[in-house]
Image (cartoon, rainbow, N blue to C red):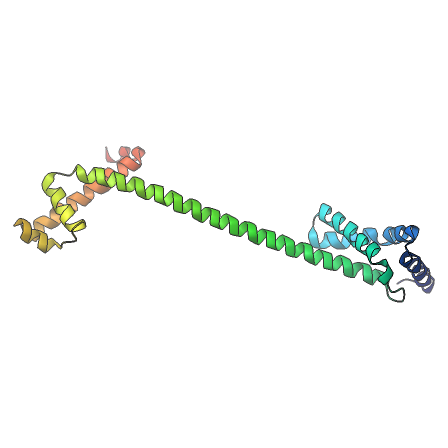
Amino acid sequence: MPSKGNDIEEKFIVELLRQGNVNAFNSMFRAYGKRVFSFCYGYLKSKEDAEELVQETFIRIWESRSEIDPDYSFGGFVFTIAYRLVLNRLRKRRNEFAGNLHWARNRSKVSNETEDSVIYSDFGRLAKAAIASLPPRRKQIYRMIKEDHMTYQQVAEELNISAKTVEAQMTEALKYLRKNILLRSFPFLAILFL
């Protein structure tokens, strides 16, 4: 706790500072600069940011020197300014982090949508080629069910075959398509099928 003599001396220096005395300002900077640095560093964990806020704190003190009340604690005045600057810096960091996170999420979303579109297009092309390579009767059944949205029973009646035959043909068609598309998409999987 400061002694009464130190309080009187500080009030005198503050009064000189209020009048624009540079030596008084330097004296207060020497008295409080390191403590303000430690205070800021404790919150920000960055030497550069803490040093910057020490400078900003004392710039503000110099700019508002005529408003300093020598009857109140100069230390309280200094740390109030420093604390507000620390809060502003922490808010700025939070907002930058949120902005960067938002940007990264949107960039990833756009990137994923583009990638999905390309993949979908590739699979569509592979699927068309695989369907075209089906035996004629199987291709006809597949298209009636998948493209014309007919039921197995409707296809059976139209082609004059049993519903079980339609089901068997569709099973074989789907098995062939899955294998064909998979092998064309991922050629290294051929090892599993050979």
